[in-house]
Image 1: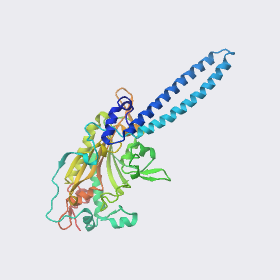
Image 2: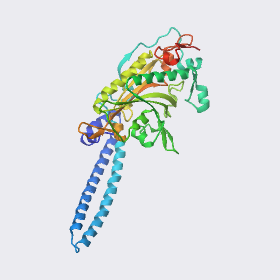
Image 3: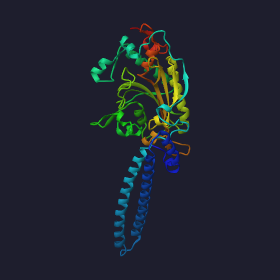
Image 4: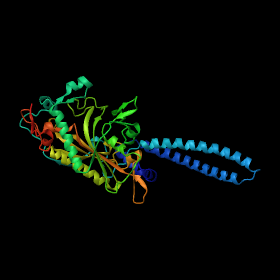
Length: 419
């Protein structure tokens, strides 16, 4: 949720942010109007309640003859107070609902526009070149006995798959390499629930315009998470955190589920865009003034991972219109995929400022002793999709694939995968 003080005192800042995102300005106008109605109703309720309290005091001091008339007035006033309280409560709920529709205020410097308006911040490495016709990751995976799409579809339908043999080993090796990096940098590992309550999903901002991409179990009224970010954001909901010794960093390992609604015909070959995958997600709670520096640290750790795996990549500053509703800024790292002749996203890292924390009631005590929302950040440290870039980048003419040195200890010492 957006900052109430900013919302009321400097709505032009939010308006500018919403314009950068390409959002309907009416959303902000409706929220301002709803907030104004609620505040007026709340003021009326408080005025009536104060008047009621004065009458109650008069009744206590009144003579026997005066009391009947005063008591009658008190009863009439009590009815008005009750009605005013109900109206204020109803309008408060409406104002909150309207405010929840406003997406996070983007940080200064975030490029305006949509998906194609990102800014490339830097590139690393030279895209792989071959003196033979390179195979794509699925052909390589099938030759190695590592990926089985056919049986995945037989068991679960389109966009499901089996990782088998060295494919399963490769994914676990990736996850364990990422976990070792997370542990070295002070992250607490968590294996998170993948089913969460509606209020947790709503609190993280995943039930907005992309709600159709989320799996919902109607009978249980639970949601399958598309990232452990959701469970990690809910981990400290309604708590006051101690951040005096620095940020709280968690690394969540989980299976993730996405319906990929609206993506029909896109990346249907292989395991680039699938319904189920595994991921190790970094999640940080920190003081708001430290959030941007922490954002840069998360990206640096991701880059160290990709460099250790010998992948060529670029880091991009995602445009406002392509941000999720909770992100104030997002950096993506895209690795080069040789057979596509393009960079493809492997990691996303978002600074959500206090947006999720306000929704979930996660606070810390500032220097003045008052509680205020923490800032939350999240970023991918490894996921199933990385196998795509690994297989294609390190392939050889005979269909074998070299295993990067950083992964070898987690692969039982194997140095290559052979058909």
